[in-house]
Structures are given as structure tokens and as C-alpha cells.
Image 1 (cartoon, protein in one colour):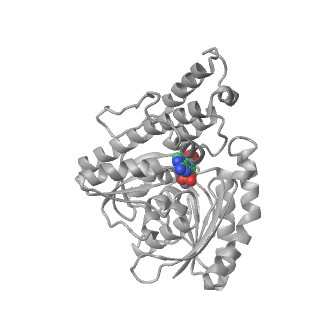
Image 2 (cartoon, protein in one colour):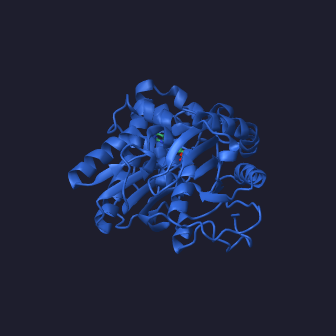
Image 3 (cartoon, helix red, strand yellow):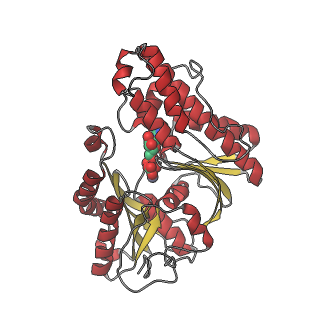
Length: 376
Ligand code: KG4
Ligand code: ZN
């Protein structure tokens, strides 16, 4: 079964094809990606309307590119999958609309995939895939969650952020350092030249005894530190120009120190989750999973605890179509897409807790808030 997957939830348009025939892990046949980073950079963050328009421009050329890479043409596609949520409503609607149009034209079913399920399962495309069950640390721009994963669609939330996500903490700290958008990769690059112990930033909820995170206080701590270094009045506005007065060494030290604070919390809570569940496998997914310091620290902690840790391939850590096609394929193989409605209705779920998938509902049977459901 050939599955075409479309991702358009935020600032990356991704299209991919997988072969989900048989029971083995779906095989990636081709994938094409366009990042909108350059376009949004001028605004210091994602502009939703521009994102939607750019998805419209990119999605069909990327579909052609993915098909060409796979050596296939559209009629070979058996199922069209798209990101149904969570994400920006307008951006999601582009993928959803195109998927339904393609499905209708081809006479093939269409399914809506949960973006975080895509991230969660993306390590299955790596050279060192995990096996169920495992603990998953999902760290993206909008989410920080620890999940217990017993199989496809069998997800139990163990803990999550009560305010900002880890990716947000990276992005906001980077902005205060004048590093632009997206901040995570830039901050982590700069941190390589800094001293992680130069400044002591808070480790929120480190000893809370539960598996929740809180990162909102970090940006205030970073702002206070930057202002102190810039010798600025502490009650002044938070502006990225403040950082212009810092030396490169000071900026690198702040970057390394804030990264160390975020990573320490993520590592400690992940190890606590592993211990609580008694599971010996940890999967790290989402954009922050690309962070080299996180990988190094987790590597050490997991080795010490005798825990196997799995990541997606580096280029599949951030948003992409491959993880959407893969998640659809694994759902099909798990028999979770059997109840398929009959019309090409499309809708999206900009807010959609991953734990909702765990209630035994697949997207195909999830009609709770949509009437006809997402699928065809
Ligand atoms: O998963 P993702 O691509 O998009 C969402 O679903 O949100 O994650 C994007 C997030 C951004 O906050 C970005 O700054 C962060 O992942 N990120 C990183 C790194 N690469 C991406 N954060 C820290 N270090 C990185 N190397
Ligand atoms: Zn994502």
C-alpha cells in the first residue's frame, strides 16, 4: 500500500511517500520539504497568514518532487494522509484541502493524522528503530510531553508542560539574545562556545516529584541576566537590541547556561519517567530532539541507567511529511483505520491533545466533534 503524506501544520511544507505493504515498518520511498524559515525571519516568528499562502504555493510542486524521487505517479497512491492537527488552522486547512482534493480525484481514501503521533513514531524510520513499549519525550515548538507508548494509538500521558514548551524556551531565550527565528538551532550553535555553568538559571519543577515541566520562568531569568550584563535598567522593555551590548563570550555563556537548564530538566524528568514505568526504552522526538547537548546528556544518563534511547534521523526531527505518511501507514497496519466514513469532508483540529488518540479512537473513528469524522 502506497501512502502519500502531507504536513502543513506550521512553517514547513512536507510531502512524502511510504510503502506500508505487509507488516514491516513502512518504507520511505521519497520525501520533499520546504522550510519557510527565510520568509518568516524578517518578522521574528511565524506569520500564520503568510504560512498558509506559502503552503498553497509549495504543496503541489513538492508532491511532484516526492513522487519523482519515489519513481511513482499519482495513480499509484492508495491512501492520502495529511496533518489534521494540532497546528495553525489556516496552514492545516491547506494540507487537508489538498489531501481531500487528491483523494477525491484519485478515488482513494484520505486520513487525518495527529502531528505529534507523527513525531512520536518518526524514530521508526531511523536505522536504529525502537520497539514497543517505550517512554517518549516529545519536545517540539509547542509541546513538551512525556508519554508511555504501548503500541500504535496506545498513548498515556505521563507529564507535560504547564506553560511554555521546551522549544518555546529555546526560541524566546534566543530572541532575547538577538539570535532571530527559529531560535533553537541558533542558540544551540552559539552555546557550543559558551560555559554552561557561567550563569545559574532556574530548573523549574526539577524536584516536583511529578513528570510535569514549566519553562515560562526561564525567559524572565534570561532577560534579567541579559539586562544585568547590558547594565540596563531592569524594568525596561524586553528587546533583542539589549543583547547587542553584550560581548560574544557573554552571549555564548548565556546560551550555554540556558540550554543546560532546559536540558537538565528534560533529562531528569525523562529518567524519572523511565524509572516510574519500569520501561527500558526512551524515544526522543520533535524539533528539540535535534539538540546536540540534549542528545549528549541523555546518552550519558541512559547509558548509566541501562536504558536504550532512540531518535529520529536528524533531518526528520523537525516537521516533515515522512512522519505523517509513516504514522498513517502504521495505523493502517495496526488495523486502526477500518471504519472509514464515505464523504470527502475535511476539517482540522488546531488544538488536539495526543492523549485523545489513546481512548481507542483512531482518526478514522473519531467523530466526536466533527459529525462525519475526518476520514473517507
Ligand atoms: O517539531 P518542530 O519542528 O515543530 C513543532 O511541531 O513545533 O519543533 C520546532 C522547535 C522550535 O522551537 C525550534 O527552535 C526547536 O524545535 N529546535 C531546536 C533545535 N532544532 C529545532 N531546539 C534546540 N536545539 C536544536 N538543535
Ligand atoms: Zn512538529
